[in-house]
Length: 93
Image (cartoon, rainbow, N blue to C red):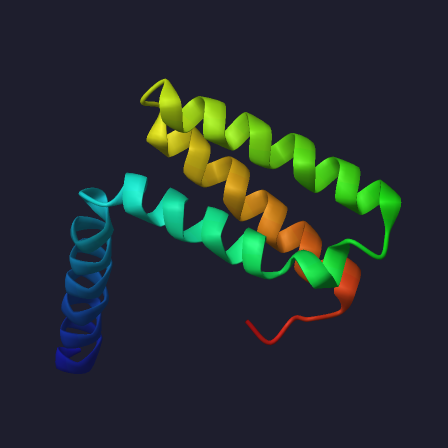
C-alpha cells in the first residue's frame, strides 16, 4: 500500500513539474521547432509534396507566432516535425 501511494505521489509531482516547466516557454519552443524544421530541410526537400506541406505549415506557424498565438504555433510546428520524421523514417528523435 505504501509503495502505491509513494508511486502516485511521484507520478503526480513529475507531471506537475513538467507542465510548470514548459508553461512559460511556448514561444521559445515554437521558435526552437521552427529552427529544427529549417535545419531538416535537406531531409524533406527531396519530396516535392512534403516540401510544399512543410512550407505551408511553416508559413502558418510564423503567422500564428506573429499574432501572439504561441500555443497554436507550437502545435503546428510539432505536427510538422512529426510528419517530417515519419516521411524520412527518422523516429529516433
